[in-house]
Amino acid sequence: MKELMLSMGKKAKAAARVLATAAPELKNKALTAAARAIRDESDAVLAANKADMDALSPETSPAMRDRLLLTPERVEAMAKGVDEIAALPDPVGRVLAEWTRPNGLRISRVAVPLGVIGVIYESRPNVTADAGALCFKSGNAVILRGGSESFHSSSKIAELLHKGLESAGLPADCIQFVPTTDRAAVGEMLKLDEYIDVIVPRGGKSLIQRITNESRIPLFKHLNGICHTYIHESADPAMAVKVVLNAKMRRTGTCNSTETVLCDSAVSQTILPAVIDTLINAGCEVRGDEAAQSLDARVTPATAEDWDTEYLAPIVSVRVVKDIDEAIDHIARHSSHHTESILAGDGAAAEKFLNAVDSSVVMVNASTQFCDGGEFGMGAEIGIATGRLHARGPIGAEQLTTFKYQVRGAGQIRP
View (tube, rainbow, N blue to C red):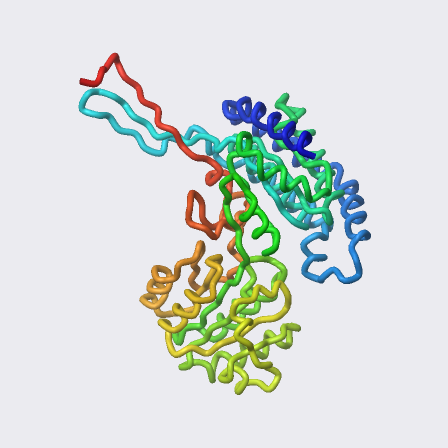
């Protein structure tokens, strides 16, 4: 295993040097061809996915099954995402700033690839396409280590990405997929600090914790998604019902799903009952504080643990708060710094929420499920970074670059 991962690291480093200076047209040609291959071999991708689905144990959660499942529509969405990434402006070579010193030196800060990116993820086979395409577009070689439950699906998708690389005459090692389900591969991968520049972990708490503890390589951390939707006293009642329902129930197994609804006491008797009723009628279990329980007999008591739980299921916790300050305080104590939304007609309250809430994405009058690279116009995302260093929120191609300084002189020497 050590030899396998070391070999992959060396190949990725060599491929990254080639890719860093590849022409944008060549990269786009490869991505367009990869998208076409995904469409042309959709049946093969679905067959591989069926093999993964059939291997799941009966105890596998509905959320896990949903994350793993591919349908013809999801395969098409995957191909479309790769096409959209190809259509994005090339992030490499952008001049971020430039100036001239009194001595005539011209200094530019220019975007360059990070180098080699390692992506360790669970269950979602579409991550193979999204992460592979985004890293490639931004000039980075990538080593993909998918979860064992999506091994057949991800292997097939990686094979189709390679077809795109071959059509453009670029090294297949630009995108590598770890060809084993042995967990020891992860441990060996995290030791490759000489070859991998950053690790992007995508998965549950146990995976993130393991990677955090073992990695010798910097991380773009993606912690759990304890997202909040706050109903301010100025919220439009119909909007509140519509947005909360979508934020919770559109897809309950995603990290951008709202897990806690907060509501001002001033409108708890007028807006919140309809919100709760709509959620329950849609099949959502509602757990609430005493004030929320008093509004509907079907609301069960929320425990202290509920406010810190990412359900990834049709369950939501509801709390009535005194005002916006109490809502912001609750979010500060319980949020995972992923995505929070305020529903408000009061512009001043909305601006206060935007500025005071410390999360990677803060919204006004919109569903938290919009926290997504595709919805942000990035084509796709490699993950949602909830930390503060280098990148935060959805990580697209632009966020997968760093910069260097280019200095142009005419023989200047320093006195």
